[in-house]
Length: 537
Image (cartoon, rainbow, N blue to C red):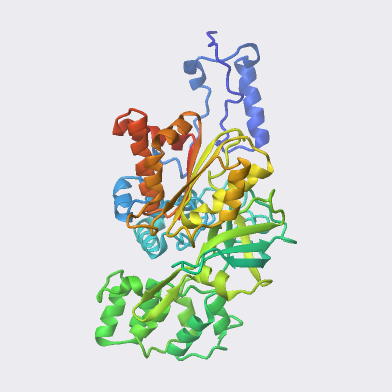
């Protein structure tokens, strides 16, 4: 018998084959005895070919090559769907996701699409960053192919179809209750922003975490917004909805932004004439008056003022209120028993009405210190410190993007890690938007923070951003990468992340003496080995 010099894999029957562990062990032993594998180191591939069991992998064995060129959070949905043309339906569903792998849905983007395809998950509205755009695309795909999408085929040895219940506080579907223990403003008086440091007491929750993880919170809608909606539909706040008052349901369970297509479908049944045409158009994803993007639930019922839906039917036409995820800005080694977040209060004006982010307003104004709320820890999808504490790290985190890097630095300080640390931080003004200035200065003084590079966009006539500082420090930055540094970015996915990556490619081109094409390949190679990691939103 001809043998190769390489060691053989420990089993012939693959783990994907539909056998129990006991059956698989017996079969491996049978084939091992058959070909006397205990006397040789390996078989020639041609010889093993006939012995391998040709077992189908199930519904996900659809011939897809595994490539996902649409997996780019900065790419518009239309472009992602174009790249997914000709791909299996489950891959098209993946392209419809927001591509952030943020975990808010309880999955990463690929696993969410696979769960939908296998009919292990029925909810099409879990992609929070994708919002209505993703929801509409998923509904369209299901209308075209949903009835033919196969369910996972059970076997005698297969686990039950129901997903296993996660431990308390480990997923959005099984939260625990924690208390808000502290909150303070990080901005100075002249700042145009309102950013809060918020702390939670984990006592009694059983929760733990590591830097890089995210914290999920279940917010509540502002009571004033809820009261305005109830008044406009002419309903009683205490109307019974599944055993709870309407006001409580709208505060705690139902999303009031943006208005879903199903609400406009309901409205089309309650109005007539031209208003019915407009409601039907909005339900179909059209924009008859050019205001569709601004219509939350309150704006929608104002637009069709005078409707009087049954409160229970009205609630059924709305979407559930989703949890929100925030990057954790603390280390359990530095501050055990607590989790801290760094949160911008989202505020903007449409017409004459100020609108605020649901979760950020709830954490800033809607809950008092000592108040309880439902929470969970979301494990990071490939975002965390290097295993080797001696590895240097470069962190780019403007604004609230500093959150996970504060956690990284606290962790390295507590564990006495020897790796060098370089932080790029930026905001609008140095005198009122320098988050955690005293902490960072102390870390510099001790030598933990090797380099701190700052960028202020409103301090002078010229707007300076973190990517500009990166270019200025390009030679040193490239030297760190060549020395094995890991590169991290946290912040806005649509603009900042794209600008930072473009700057990094330019740095590699200039200081690495590479062509633009080779520089892109260099950065992509960093991503593949997880030396380039992003936590973007």
